Image (cartoon, rainbow, N blue to C red; front, side):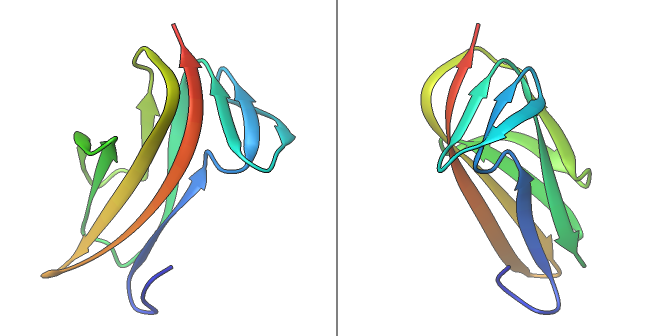
Length: 99
């Protein structure tokens, strides 16, 4: 979390093996097989943007977003939170296999 008055943190997926959106076992890295719901914890955030490998995939104020596109390999999921004219962000690197 970057700021005490407003922040965003990706809770899921993080440091686990996930199969079809279910947490299976803890790991040193994040591995996703199938779709995954990205879940964020926010404090005083007005709007959220989610990027996958730098490409905007979601814009709104929901703290969950379903990543169900075809993907293979390592990807960066980044969440950017907006509060007034300021921003904060969090990101996670995932190895993903979704067909």
